Length: 589
Image (cartoon, rainbow, N blue to C red; front, top):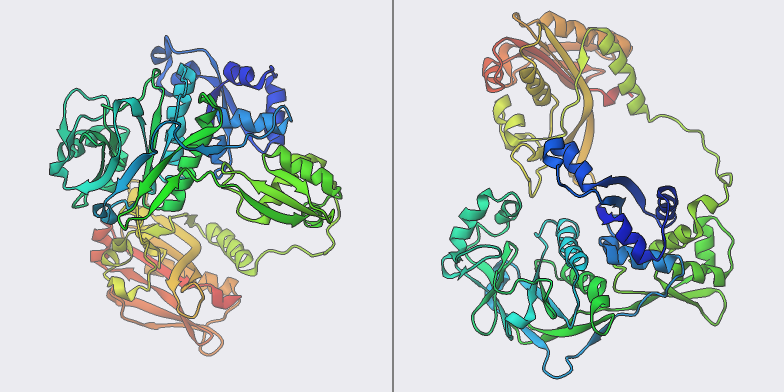
């Protein structure tokens, strides 16, 4: 959940009254939020960097409030205050309006075909005659950052640019050029750089280096120019210094470039609705025109209101209450969802404002009604269906085996379900195509490329990390692996397996063999052919030739045990012999 930090005194001033910490905590709970922490800038720095660094920091009390991840309208002080004031019925939810410029044509943003290969979408709007104070300015900048980290997915989906409209002139052009052809003075820098030089410059920047990967491998970089050739921004990396906004800015041009047009519209709506209350004509936003490469034009922001109809009976049944249609309509209105009872007296018409992009289904409206009613006020009832809770048989078997393997002197390990391709293939002397592994389409790191197909590699990495511990090392894990399976609707299935390793100066095959016998004894499977269990020699590239056996139980192959191949040992940076047991426990249910 995103956390919003607001100054307590500023918040109370905006709310029009003072609360005790306990009262505000209760108010947050009623509204579906959580007061996570009461702190100050000085306390935060002292905790993270020490008392010396905290000297001179502000003692102003901060409230850190946890906000639901899809409530983008609560990510700043303005939206938070507006929501709470409507909830407390101190004000009505405002109506946001898109207006045309009073004395000129709308600002125009022209998109060229070159952007198609990098960030094909863009939207724009203007906040006209806005008044900033230091607090409002700080909140404006912070909201951009919150949106970038949240709905914008760290600028991969949407990047926001804000500019002082009085320093630039339209129409604006959104295009893409080779990095060597882009040259401008970036925000808070003293000289001009080419896009190539900026990529090098920002590789050491603690903030911007996290976004370089989005475009650095592209042949062309997106860039926005005004009619005089001045660079507004190079999204999603940095804005130009020429058009940066300040406390004296009166007219703000906001542009959002994106790979996802729907997200871009949401982000633009959030930016303008949160701060249009500071415009000369509150809650109005000046439209901008976007011209697409195919010639069509669109006006933004959309600020679209839509209406949904649902019955009071639906809400009463789902929430577990018995309220009148009129009262439910009042509850929804408290949540910024203007609602009216329709002529039949049973249906409710709910108007969803542009700030509530989280409402996509009748269940979302029902949830808001439950929140406004108060979760603590919902009467407790006995469930109509009586069931006896029971542990999943596979989990019960796993727990019983864990206890007995621990009693046998083995230590349980819990390893990652994701690993690298190398871990399950090259290091185990196998071909990746033979492993039936499920691959991550966009892995963030080389360590997590595939879902594991064996528990063995995780245990060997654990041994390698603890190889300085006293010998012998006895480890086991009972967990799921993931295997491709075309018979399943998702194309893959989980498989519960037991894996154990013994690492010592001698291979200890007899130890692993004894552990297998103990497991079979616990599973009440006797040695022998047919309905019993037996082992027979097998060839497996992971194991030392002639030191590997396949395990059969009740006529089916369930796994293998043996002494690991020296090359496997070396590839996991181990120096001593190791024996392993790997079996499937699902057939024993």
